[in-house]
Length: 352
Length: 144
Image 1 (cartoon, each protein chain N blue to C red):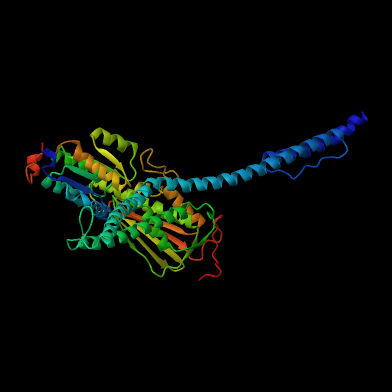
Image 2: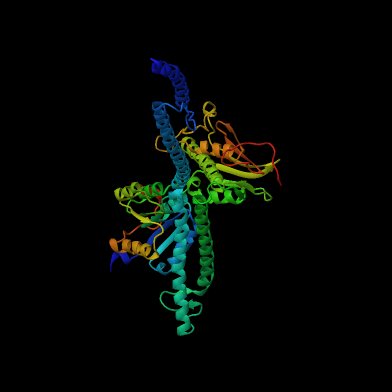
């Protein structure tokens, strides 16, 4: 009886305490460890069992957090590579064209060189102004064409090098989240070259760059992807226009400039414009007007989250149906305080 | 005397890259004695030229801004059905491959080596005798 009384007296308090712990845990708060009454063996057993469970849970939670971060990083890389994948066929074409004319030119230079060497070996040709051996090559033709062949081949090699550099910058996995000063004019030029195959059939691109544009601290790979998405978006609008209205007057205008403490990139097209009723949805993830299989509608949503959330910038657009659309990207010159959190603070130190 | 040696092979090259065309003209300088070659950057202009000259062979790029290669060749076939067609593409899809086979065209992947281009050209020359053509035939006369 005495024992029974003492148990009744102690257990409710223990049970109440235990219940409070359990309820907290159910609502998602994990205590560091739980502490019940010390002297009862049974209670101590429960206590240590629960603490064991808690420590196991903590370990699992930590693992999950680590895995989540890893997955987020992988997803970010995958998205970036996905954009590159969309461009891959176009990039192949952009590289193959210069490769084709360089290869033709080198073949020409080889025969020209062979002819010249033969002429050197055999002495002056009986007929003046003819490079000896094989089919006759006129000296004037050779003079003019070798110079142009070399010049155009060098240009082609530079073009390939530019494209390869752009791909490498874009796919750079090492510095994905580091902000660094970026020359936006240069980045836009590179992006135009990289996307050429996607817009050349529907549009011409005109640019107006501010030559004194200051460099902007940003994640270069992301801003390049922003640019790619805006250009592809304009090109698609113009391709749609060319298809539906059979007009091929597609124009994409890209400008850079400084406004106050921001750098502004303007991308304008004279496409069909965005219908009024979907204008408030274009930045939603997975919102797309494309047919199934044509794209998952991730482009503008990415542009928005990168510019606004990760670079503390602003993204606006104006669109008039039938006349075209203008996107404006404003990036603060001081750069975002933290690229990961996307927090916006009003005071900026060390601004130039 | 073999009929195919009666006249030069008339060849048209169409590509939206002027540099590619220039390099072809340069590279093929040594076949000038057996081929009359034209190099045209604009597909519509190429078709107009084909109306005048009825080319025996057309090499056309697939991806061109103003008019896709398929469209150009279809038009060219309508003008002169015997024209031998080669499509060149920097990134041909399996669908392009199938389409080319279906139409009896040959698909050449870019970049292609100068020697394979020349052997394609001479392959045509050796394949079958060239039909004798009326000089400067007009589009209307040749339309089916």
